Image (cartoon, rainbow, N blue to C red; front, top):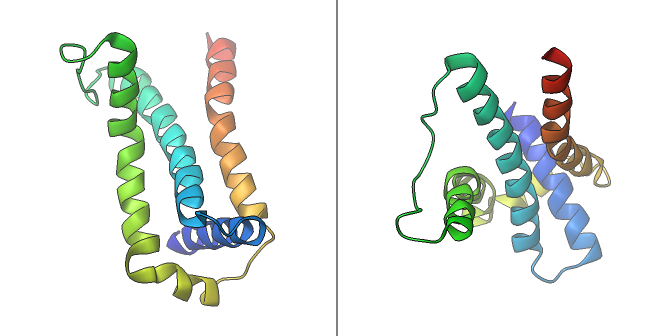
Length: 134
């Protein structure tokens, strides 16, 4: 499973570096961390609502910020920040991406694009499935 993860990362990094060599680390980190965060958000919503029936993965910041800002910060902290940290240590820490680029094959961005589009389609597919199963 980690092999596929690394292949997706190599595909994303190489694709972005081929088009734009400026800030490619940040761009690839944000793209894939965002996609992982969206997938995790859908998973947690389904898991909490339909599998265990209680909401436990939450952070209340409305006492400190107005609601839109609190919701944005909560989403960032709970769903995106964990993946930014994990991805940093698995890919970018000590320039591990250099070893990975030498080890894994570049697929012209197909793996990265497929992963990103699949993660972005999850909320829509979940919504459609919810409507059909009601």
